Structures are given as structure tokens and as C-alpha cells.
Length: 459
Image 1 (cartoon, rainbow, N blue to C red):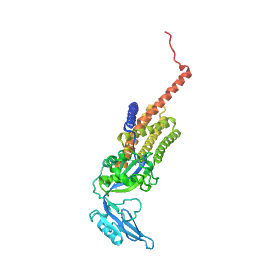
Image 2 (image 1 turned 180 degrees about the horizontal axis):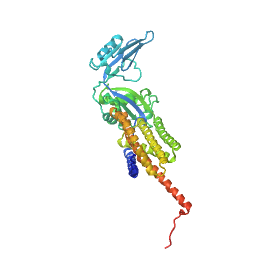
Image 3 (image 1 turned 180 degrees about the vertical axis):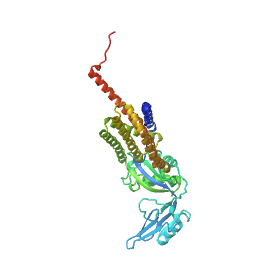
Image 4 (image 1 turned 90 degrees about the horizontal axis):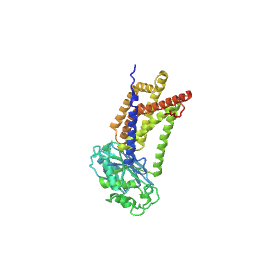
């Protein structure tokens, strides 16, 4: 016979512990200023950059136009123009393994193309990094082609954040992308109602903000900003704050050391809309679980399941606030995954409780809870441990946002088991006790033993 563990003895201590954890999360929320919002929930400029030195520059003064594209296999140039035959030239890295050989072949096969090397000729061509968005059109302005040595020194994310914040004078969101030695970062400069129009590349020419001088005590960002926007009216064609971000980084790391991989603008309306959508999604999740559990079981079970979902969500949110983990769409995905995992575990326990109530009708409800939790304990442990192994591998072998995702999942899985075992079942036991007390009071009233009014004896 399976040993029945008295889980009910820990219902009250677990409830107190949950209240303390939630209270700690609420205090931390107000002390720290709320969530550490990621790039998805703040309006502003999002720029994806990689700190990679310049390998060589290209200029063009030949006949027609020349457009260059590149990928991990090689560089491709298309030379076309009016009255001339279009030429497509391919320079594969397998054929030209060094930058010296690659540049020599490019300038030899395409007359009018000029190259200026910035690295030793024996530098591997496979280290080259694609930079600007779109297909760069070659011309008299040198086009930089960057490279990244796999053995390059790592740049801490804290240094990137300090460089940006020292120049901007306010907090900046910086997120590491990929492996640390790739020196790949996502940077967000937050916008407000006054600065948002100036951040849009297609906006009408706005006026220089009144607090322009506050954009950097040392003038580093101010100089970069002026290079992009000018000193007075800001031309619409130059309204590219990403170039100002690049100027800040190049002022610290050196000219030609920054390659822009992506640049986007997120408007205030979009950020607010995303926040509203997240709220609706969570509300819909709660309603669907309430509806499903009410149909399959009864209202007592449904309310318990919803309470468990809310409890898990608050616990994970408190963990995110206390650890200052970045709160972004990946965090939302982790929370929703946790809610689904916890709900599945709760439904399994509910199913066993319903079955045991039919098998042992004479037992008290609290004993039914203890028996059901004991019978599902092995299943809960095996499922949690096997899932945890996969998530731990994800946490150990990844970095950045994916590592935060795995960490949130691990915390959520532990919280989910704890919630189902102690919080949800404690609530159901409380509900059952109240229902029994109400039934006894109704029987007493019906038999005349209890009138519902206090009686006083005469002295």
C-alpha cells in the first residue's frame, strides 16, 4: 500500500511563505521602480550592432553603377548601367581564403573598383562581417567592410551600457546577442512624446530639442548628434539617431570599429499596444482555464486552478523584479509556458482527487487531498526533473535572452509544483471546510437547534 504523506500539515506554513514572497516582490517593485523593461516595451530606437574592426574599404569610379552584397560564403558585385551589359561577379571565400587575395581579385576583375586594406593580407576572409542594411551601392564615399576575429577579446555588456549612459545622461537598454566573443549587442535609446518625432526617419523636420546640451556632459554624444542632425533644424533625411549611437560607440572604441546590423524605430503607440495585448492575453488565459475546469470538474476546482495560475505568475514576476532580469516578450513567453506547465500538473492532481472521492467516499476531504498528492508525487517528480534537465542545458549552453528564458522556466517549474501541492490544495481544503460548515449550519437551523441569533442566559 502506498504511504500517504500528510501534505496538509504544511498548508498554513506554505500560505504564509507565499504571502511573504509576494509581499517581497511588491516591495521590490516599488523600491526598484518596477520592471526592467526590455526593448519591446519602450518606445525609441533599437539598433543592433557588432563591434568589429574595418578590414578594408571600397570606392568606385568606374562605368555604370556597382552594388555589393555579401553573406557567409562570399561577396557578390553587380555592375550595370545604361548602354552596357550587366555583369555579376562572385568572389567566394573558399576561392579567396585571405583578405589580401580577395581584394586583389576584386580590383583585378572589376575595373574602377579601388580597395584600401586596414588589416594584414593574411587575415581570413571567413572573418568578414556583413554590415549595412540593404545592398550598398559603391561610390566615391568609402564603403567599410568589417571583420571579427573569433579570438577577439570579449566586451562586457556593462561596459557598453556605461559608454552609452555616460554620453546620453540617462538609462539605456543594452542586451547581449549570441556568444560573448561575437561582441554583438542590441541597444535601445528610449523616446518620449517630445523626442519621438525626431527619432523617425520619415518624420517631418523637427526642431532641435531644448535640452540638447544635456545629451552628454563631455559633448561626445552632442558631437555625434550634431554630425547627424546639424546645429539647427534637423533635416528629415538625416534624422537617423542610430548614426548618433554609432558615433558614441566609435568615439569610445575607435572609428570604423562599429558595424550596424539592424536599425528600427518603435513608436510610443506600438509599445503601449503591445502592453495592452499582453494584459488581454493573460486575462484570456485565466478565463479559458476557469471555463475548462468548471466544465470538466466543478467551480471549486476551477477557482483553485485560476488561483494557482495567478500565484505562479506573481511569483515569477517577483523573481524578475528582484533579480532585475530584463522584462521583454521572451519573459512573457516564459511566464505563459510556466502557466501552461503548472495548469497541466494541477489538472492531473484534480483528476486524482475526483477519482479518490468516488473510491473513498467515507474519508475526509483533507485525507483525500493527502492521498491524491501522494499518489501523483512520483509522476510530478519524474516529469519535473526530466523537464528541468532540458531547461538546465538551455541555461548552461546559451547566453543573453535565451539564458534568462531558461532561468525563468526553472524558477517557474519549481513554483508550479509548490503551488499545486500546497497552495491550490490548501485553497480547496478551505473551500470544502466552509462548505461543510455552511451545510451543518443549515441542518442545525432546519432542526431548530440553531436559529441564527445569539441567546443570552439570565443571571
